[in-house]
Length: 417
Image (cartoon, rainbow, N blue to C red):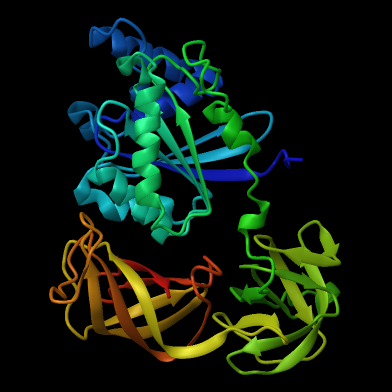
């Protein structure tokens, strides 16, 4: 049973001209998720450009530069909904120089759609996108083999791409990979089943997305509650109220649970779990709640409430797979602000262990320069302990960002290993 309000975030990736924007346009168009004024504007632009039908890519290529160049530069987010589910699409660029945008768009995704041109098969760019998807631990990958109309809807062409991808993906840590032959331009197997490929027995793309099981993607074992703020209403009705508000990162909290506050190590029990709609007996990720405790403990923003029998490891030395997002390269031993959940500390990059060659996926321990779009394994030292989990176990408490204090820019995003 799919929860009707359940939100599925997915990201699209593929090489330039593989048809990502057209595919998203087709999804929105065929699922009737486009406003009439948008439709009219795109129909007019398509006419001006001399296209016979509607140019579906125009629904997503929002930036002016992109429309002129015909490529996607930034991450464009689109929201749409069907009777079964709500969706957020992160349309990420295919160009090699925009690796950082793919990392940004994919970091919160439940699924990644990787487009492959049926004529060209698995290319370097496909491998790169699949690698980033596995690095970011996206639980589900859907490989859409597009432009099937240009290979006469041939099953052999589809099987060839499938074999190429499977051979490569056996090295990746991805649990669920599915393959769908489509034509985004003509709509085959996107929202409606294709009449031209009766040899394909699977479901079309939208049906796959609507029925994908994502509840088990959230870590329900490790209870982690990063405190964002302390609530003291100071009103007559709530004279002694002291609540700790935040969003549950993972796991389940119940009234009466024995908890420990990290990093202080003080223990107490959960007295109430409050929300805007009233009190709850239990709450789970990713709900936003306010916890009150039976004891008065000094707790502030950046602390983490966990269950006493399941604690993260507080540490000042962490190893991270880091994606460098900034134009300016990392300065050796420079200080940055590290943000981990609601906790901010000062940190220094101690060592670059190796850099990943994003083309060959080889590890390079000679070249240690962190420049834009570089992905590298680094050692970071923080001024105070962080309560971290392995990113593979917990995507929320296993991720960090680095901020440059001088410019206030986010310079890197990382996954703790």
